Image 1 (spheres, helix red, strand yellow):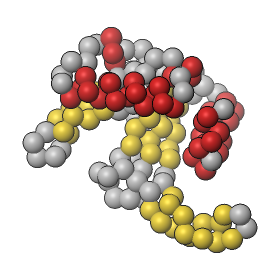
Image 2 (tube, one colour):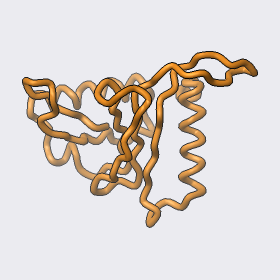
Image 3 (cartoon, one colour):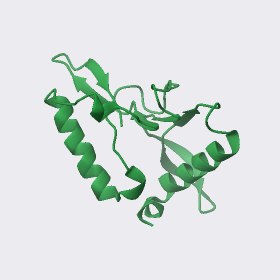
Image 4 (cartoon, helix red, strand yellow):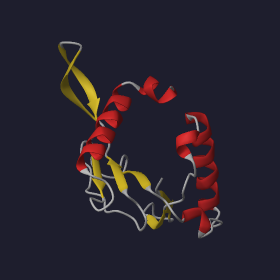
Length: 141
C-alpha cells in the first residue's frame, strides 16, 4: 500500500509504503482496518522503519491525481517482487455478457522482478487480479 501525505497545497510531501503483514491470511475487512490504521500512523508522522520494511508487493494508485484512464509505469520498491499500479477509471464501451455497454475501465499495470518471478506465475497472478476486479466476490473465498 502506498501512502501519500498531502502538504498544504494538495501535493504530496512524501511517499511512504507501509506493509500490511500476512495480508494473504486476512479478510477484506481486516485489510481495510489495518490500512486505515497505517494511514492514521502515517498522517500523524508515527510510522516506524519497521512498519515499512520487508514488503513483497505494492499496490499503488494514481486515481484522482492523474487523468482518468491513464496509469504510470511503477518502479519496484526495495524488497518488492512486484508492484501493481492502478489508474483512475473512465467510462468506455466494452463487451459484457455478450453485449457492448459502457463500463468503468481502469488501467492496471504490473511490474515484476524477473529475477524472482517467472513470467508464467506473474501472468497467472495478473489473470487472477483481472478476474477479481471483474468479480470482487472472488476475494471473499
